Image (cartoon, rainbow, N blue to C red; front, side, top):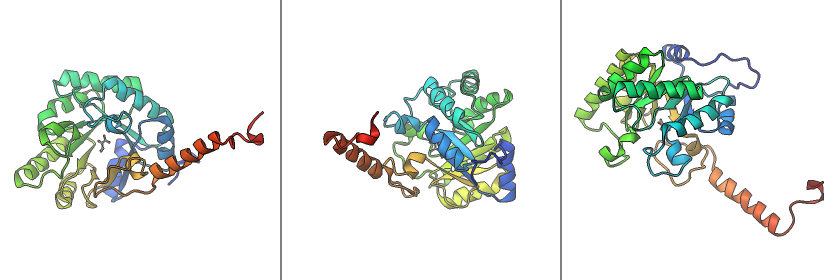
Length: 272
Ligand code: KIV
C-alpha cells in the first residue's frame, strides 16, 4: 500500500473497525513533525499517533510528563499538514484530562480546533471514564490506552511488563470492556502478556492495537524513531529495528565535517 498516486480511501474510525471485522491487521506509528509524517503516510500506514513520547524523543525528557498541551498541538499541527490518508490520533498530555471532565473536554477541543487532528488518546480506564464520556459527547473520537501507561510511571516505579498478576489482569479486562461500552473507537494495550492481550482483543469488538502485547491483537504500534534505529539506547524485547539510522546519520555527518575541514566541500560544481 502506497499513497503516492492518491488512489486511496482515507482511514476513519469506521474503516479501522471494519478492518477488525475483516481480520485485516492495523498498522500504526508515531510522528511528531511534518517531514517524518509525510514519509510515514506515503508508506501507507493506517494510523499516525502524535504521541506524548515526543517528550522523550523530541525534547529529551526522561518521562512523558513534562510535555504541555500547546507543545502537543504544535507537533500535531505539523503532522496534520503532511498527512493525506492516515487517521491522526493525538495524545492528551499528563495533567490535561485527569482533574475533571470539563477540563478534559476543553483540552480535547483545543487539540481538535488548533491542530486539525482527527481524534485523541487518553491513558487509563475506570478512573478517567467521566472525562472520556464527556469528550465523546462533543463528537470527538477517543482511543483508550491501558496496560503500561507511561504517564503513571511514578506510580508503577518501573517500565516492566504490567498485569502479570491476576488482580491487575482482571482490572485490565474490565477496563477494556468499559472503554468499549463507553464508546472508544480503539484501545492501545502496552507491554502486557501476549495471552492476556489476545483474550481482550477476542472479548471486545473495537480494535486493540498492541505495543509489546504480542501477535494476537488487531494491530501494532511502535515509535518510528525506535523502528528506524534513530534512538539506539532503547532496546526493549518487543522492538524490531528496520534500520540503524543513528549509526548511518552520525557516519554521514562525520564525512561532512571531514569534507568541510579539508575544503573538499564545496567543490567547483557545488558553487555559483
Ligand atoms: O506516546 C506514545 O508514543 C504512545 C505509544 C507508545 C503507544 O503512547
